[in-house]
Each structure stands twice: as structure tokens, then as C-alpha cells.
Image (cartoon, rainbow, N blue to C red):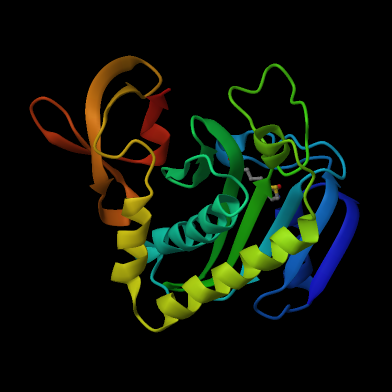
Length: 242
Ligand code: BTN
């Protein structure tokens, strides 16, 4: 099922309330030209100029997925997006943990995943993503946005890009369903932003320390090697200073 909307508060919210009213098939896709209340991570707002970008949510029903393993959902969509973005630019595309897509040091795409549990398992996953495609300028207050247009000077067919993203996501979802989680995890590590490099981090919005990202640990936590230990961080606990 495909819903192409002109304007909505948030595609994630739309698909969630729609699927509560009437069950929607797995793979249902909602896209919008504009969001009046686009949701970003940690309660942030997602900015996107009308009619320029991709604002989409996809409904999956990974009923066999344990909540402890849910990071694989982030990995799959981030990898799908990484590969498609990489076809449109010769610059370096990477996944900034947990699931931002970067072109060099600038953010081109954000992902917001919302899960619904039924007992011990995940009944619904809503994968929302905002990919900056044809937007030329961004508000000053955004830290480091970019778009495919800014990178290349070209205007792209958003529907064609969306089709490719869906195809790549399906590829990873099939890998996941056939139990090939290790391959997904390995691939994710290969394209992880600043992996094995010394970086500065801000912990709990206060103290600053140096460390090296060595990978992803349990529950999708970031593994950082500092001078004297290896530490694991949750998304809310740490911020990379670019
Ligand atoms: C982030 O903060 O990086 C995540 C941004 C996610 C934005 C997308 S746009 C489509 C979908 N609907 C929303 O309300 N948010 C996501």
C-alpha cells in the first residue's frame, strides 16, 4: 500500500495512527511533500523545504524480532540509504552512529524508528527517514545539513531514488529474515563514520573526552576505547564533537 500525501504533521505519526485504525500490510509506504511537525531524534524537529526532499515512513512487522535485537532495524535502513546515496555522489558516504547518513562531515539524511511491542516481541516497526535531495539552502541554525543537490549541483528524481531505497531495504530485510545478521552487522561496521579514528565526545552534555570508536556492542551501544578502558554508550549519553 502506498500513500502519497501533500501535507501531514508527520509521516511516522500518520502511519502509526492509520495502522491502529485499520491494519496495514507490511511494506506500507507513506511519503509527504511537507511535514508540519516532522519528528527528529530526541524530540527534535525535522526541517525540510516543501516538495524538495524525501520524507517517508515504512511499516514493517518483524514479529519474530526480540526488542534486544532491534538495532538491526537501524542497521538495515541505514545501509540501504548509504548504498543509494553512494550512487549519486563520488564523495564519501558513511553512517554516523546510530543512524544518520553523512556525506563527508555533513548530514544528508536522518532516520527515526518507532517500535510497538506485543508481549516480548516487536509487532510493528515504523521506519521514518528524511533524505535531503533537491534542497539548495538550509536554515542557519541547523548544524551541518547537506543535500544531494548541494553536493552535485544536480536535481534528482525523488521517486526513482525512493524506489531504489525500497529495493535495497527489501534486500537487507530478506538477509535479516534468513538469519544473516552477522553480514548486516559486518557491513554496518565497514561504513561506520570515524571508526578507528581518535574523536572527541561530549558525555551527558557536560564532560569532554577523547576516544576511538571500535564498534557496536550489545543493544546497539557504541563501543569507545579511551586511554584506560573500553566503554559502552547509549545514544542519549554521548555526542560526537565534529
Ligand atoms: C533525525 O533526527 O535525524 C531523524 C529525522 C527523521 C525525519 C523523518 S522525515 C519522515 C519521518 N517522519 C517524521 O516525523 N520523522 C521522520
